Each structure stands twice: as structure tokens, then as C-alpha cells.
Length: 318
Ligand code: ATP
Image 1: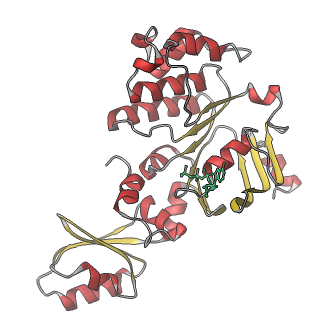
Image 2: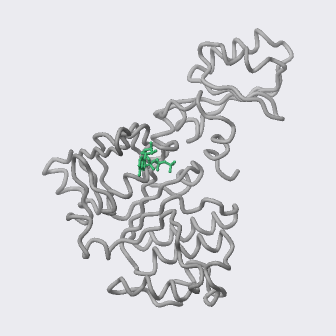
Image 3: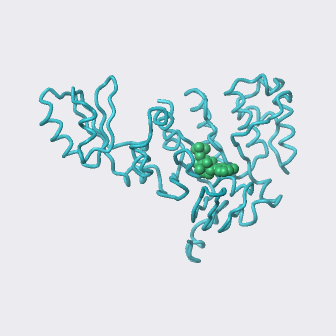
């Protein structure tokens, strides 16, 4: 909760949840969440499936109402026209008219905003210059994502909500997209990004907020989140059985790939001692500070729960 002197120092939040609880019947999607987006920052909202990320975004957009607590957009009720026309949103939506052409979609969305970008600028920023006359239904998956991005930015809003914006994009398109987001932030825009790609949060975000089971479990810069989790990653070539290694008390997670064993731990010295004791032929030993992925798994307690498919999602494009 901000004190009065804090609010004199910090710019006012552009969007905010205060003490928000939201349930769907028996399911509590968010519980007592406080989150304020400061202008000019990229905030990444991370969390496993079902953590409450989309619910948080929908509350800030006024698409849902909180059971308890308050959602504010530009200091007021999110449903007012003055708030809504200062926001662009790229949500995972279905039902976009298939037969409308790219340019027609952009024209339609631009008409909702008081000072939209010129069509040529929107097309250029979204990389759609050559596709203006193509119907939505004849775009590839990546091009459809770019159109949804175009619809979010065409009104030139100061605040953007990007809900998993690079799902399904190849590595090159993802990096091109990051450049666009950096450019928007460089021009003073505020961005809330939800993503499963930790690499994306690391590359783009000024601030990472980790949600787990409807609560915020960490909030800081990517560097702070990584150091808070304080995990270390050990790699080595060894014939030791990963099942045996995972039973050691200091070990949080083990996996084997072609390169050998990868072990996640908060007590690397103890694990290294055990490894050397158990396997005299061990080679290629390497201990490194863990990345955001490990921090995330530590913070959300997901280290033991994620199966291979989830882990691939979390790692994003290597
Ligand atoms: P994901 O990463 O899978 O998109 P998320 O973090 O965005 O997940 P939410 O979509 O906000 O999570 O969902 C939070 C919880 O609320 C989940 O348990 C989900 O099943 C539940 N939930 C979401 N929408 C509804 C709904 N309309 N009716 C019932 N339960 C819902």
C-alpha cells in the first residue's frame, strides 16, 4: 500500500488492482492481489497455467468485476470510455471476422480511438505492409498474431496489455516483436505482458510479477527474482541414475539430456561433494547461477510438478 509521501515520489499507477479477490464459483482465481503498473515500464506477469494471469488482466480492463477490492485504470473505473480509449489489448481471442481484410480490421479498430495512428504506421509497426488486402482467414498463424498486435497499437494508446503475444511465433518473429515492444516503451508506453516464455520476460521486462494459485509470490526486476530464488544449476557427464540423484535432500530437480545430467539445487557444494564421491568417472562439471526458469519453478513450487511438455513451454524458444 502506498503512503502519501510515496505517491509524491512515484508517478501514479496507470492501472491498479488493490486487495482484489475474484472467484468463479468454487475456484478462487485471485486472492488479495495488489498490483500497480507504473508508467513507462514493461511488467511481465508470469505464472503456471491457471495462476490467475488472464483474470488479473481482465479485471484491469474492466471485462470482469472483482468480488472484493478495486480495479482502476488511469485512476478511475476501467469501464469508462475515457479509460478504455487509452488502452490497447492483444488478448487470446477467437471470432475475428475471417473475411475482413487486414486494412479493414485496422480501420474498424482505429475508429474506436480519438487519435489513431495513420494506417501506414500501424501496418509498418506490425510488419503487415504487404498484407493489407489479405482477409484475416487467409493469414498464417504468425501473421494473425501480428494483426492482433496491430489492433492493440492502432489507437496509439499509452497503455498496452499483451496476453501471451508471441505464442506460436518462430524465434525470428519473436525477436522482431520484442524490438517493437522496446520501441513502444522507448516512446513512453506502458506494457503489461503475460507470457509463458521466461526468456521473453527476461529480455523485455523491467519488472516481473510471479503469480501462483491466485497470489503474488514474487515481484521485482528479473535480476532480483533470479537472486531471490538463489538456485544454482550443476551440469556434468555422469553415469549416475537421475532417480538416485533426485533422492538427495539438497536436490530440487534433475534431468538428463544428451549433454549429461542437469541438477538444480540451493546447496551446490553438498551436491558436488556427493557427485564426486559417488562417481569417480564424473567429467565436465560446471556450476552456474540459475536462470529465470529455475527461479520461477522455485517460487511457484513447480519444480516437481512440471512434466516435459510444461517445461518446454516455460523454456520458450531456445
Ligand atoms: P493460463 O496460463 O492457463 O492462461 P491464467 O494464469 O491466465 O492461466 P486464469 O485464466 O486467470 O489463469 O484462471 C485462473 C483460474 O480460474 C483457473 O483455475 C481457471 O480454471 C479458473 N477460471 C478462469 N476463468 C473461468 C471461468 N470463466 N469459469 C470458471 N473458472 C474459470
